[in-house]
Amino acid sequence: MSGILGGAGSRSGVIGETEIDYEEGTWTPVISGITTTVTKATYTKIGNTVFIRAWITAGGTGTTDTITGLPYLSGSDNTSASAALLNAVDWGAGTAPMARILNSSQIITLRTATDNAGANAVFNWVSGEFVMLGIQYNI
Image (cartoon, rainbow, N blue to C red; front, top):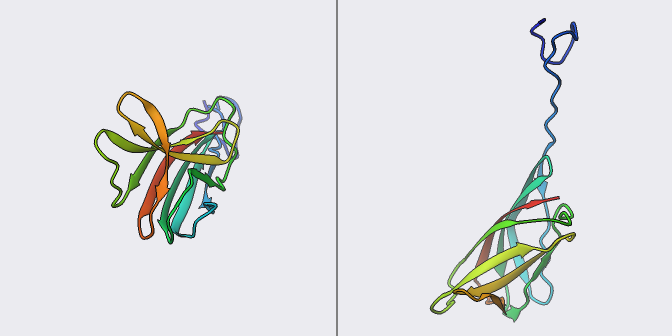
């Protein structure tokens, strides 16, 4: 073996060249129907997995469950692992926020989930409250 991993030199014994598909950038979350301020919205793409982060503050009150503008279209068999942290929201007993990315889309839906009942209520934005998103999805 030559001991060379990619680059110049003999190709005999080379263990292969590996290029990592890696990208970082910003994206623009769009929430229709209410005024919002986006403090930060970034993404990291590694191979076919995208990790997004966003900090969004409501400037008004309204009911909408859709955030558009993801940096990449999700896969048709997308399974997203997601987390959403919301400030000063009274969810009531046994409920929690959830976020998911629809298959073959650039859309995040926000819902509230009730114990053992799945997603059931459209998200209500309240002026001054913020949403911090951290979501992983496949493209």
